[in-house]
Amino acid sequence: MLCKSGKRNEDQQEEVEKYQRGSKPTAFIEQEEIDYFKKMAVELISEFEKEWNAGSFKEFQAFTTSMGVRIETCKEVLHYAAGHDQLHFGYCLLSGELFYINH
Image 1 (cartoon, helix red, strand yellow):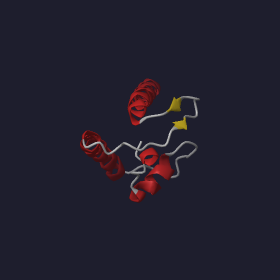
Image 2 (image 1 turned 180 degrees about the vertical axis):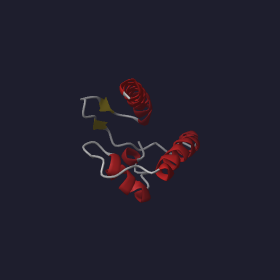
Image 3 (image 1 turned 90 degrees about the horizontal axis):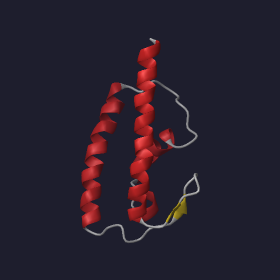
């Protein structure tokens, strides 16, 4: 949502490119990087909430997802992202179960 509202942090561009659609693992992910993303997940929620409550997301560039869903507003992004992230979470849980079953 940050990139579609003109608020993307350019310092995070490398992280976006490393994990965006079509990317492939190039190296083992160290615990330090995992810890960083856990920390950012919590911090960014708080930061987003403050900006949302301050009305910082008035401008928004509408887009269509790769699944053909048209997103017109920041509020729609929140609804879409919640479901999207739950899919990723479910895949992670299943992957973990399959790993432990097979090893």
